[in-house]
Image (cartoon, rainbow, N blue to C red; front, side, top):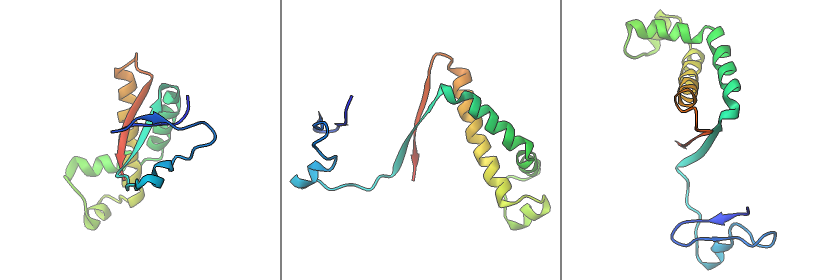
Length: 120
């Protein structure tokens, strides 16, 4: 337990007295992060399924899938032809992520968490 730092030097910050930026006193500079680390726990499985069902019920997924049955991409004209909105595309994209998370847990019943880094 406690806060650690890892890399070319490893250690643990002293509890309740040492700041996470203590290395800056010695010339360390904070780097811009290009990724956000995430974890999804198996305990969120019901929430994943519920959110997928909610998105599906709104009709966004069906509208976009109908468009993609005939088209390989989209632009304003194609979206108008199929009455697809930016919200439909956004919800469809999120639905795909949700499916990926659900399938991960379905395919790995002995794993309790899914970890990944998302580019910023």
